[in-house]
Length: 276
Image 1 (spheres, rainbow, N blue to C red):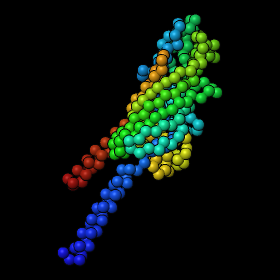
Image 2 (cartoon, rainbow, N blue to C red; image 1 turned 90 degrees about the vertical axis):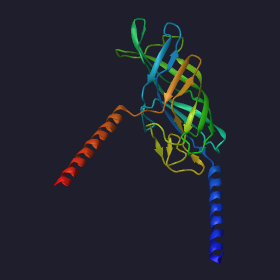
Image 3 (cartoon, helix red, strand yellow; image 1 turned 135 degrees about the vertical axis):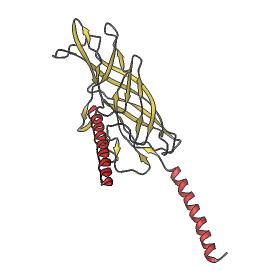
Image 4 (tube, helix red, strand yellow; image 1 turned 45 degrees about the horizontal axis):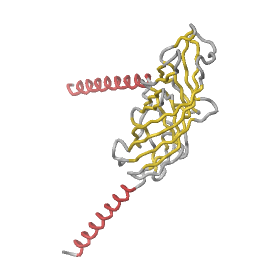
């Protein structure tokens, strides 16, 4: 073999070794989760049992619209993950969490002493709803799902009974309208953006963001996949990443319709030119 051939062979071997080494480094690279906020929309199956003559009440989301100056769309529940979680694939880690927004409304009105009320639920002022989340990173970033999570947390919430015909909320018609409930939840997550509520921010330390624009080595964002059920002893809160708003869906459908018509007309024009 000539000197050139031998040199090429050596470079080939070195190149393959380098690629193999790079592959090993990449697969071992940390796949941590940076702090941020998870935005949710309440869905079917959410209820709370007040007991007494009121009993079980079904709830739906009462969209926040904006929160702390950010457009959060149809989101009615916000959970902050307080800590960066350093992970490799196959690892588990824990972060502190806090429910910082909760806005619900009864699906149906309720009659109390011959007056009809809607029931609204919000977090109790002056009390923090906190807990912890364990994040399991089970799969490489090439998979649709990176892993699973589980959480447990306490929620302090207040129920307000507001007359359907207008007027001030009444004094609580049950023993108390200020509640503390312990919830547990579990689900799946991914590093890839899910949902329609996007709060972007350059700083990797921005707590309100769910999309951080300046990557931090070894860390990426966290997004819940699909439905999550928050379970308590006498209530259930079912949430999803927020869906598109109706106007957004209509706008997209209209745009697609115009696109199809434009494409069809362009095709007709080309055919006319070909004929002529």
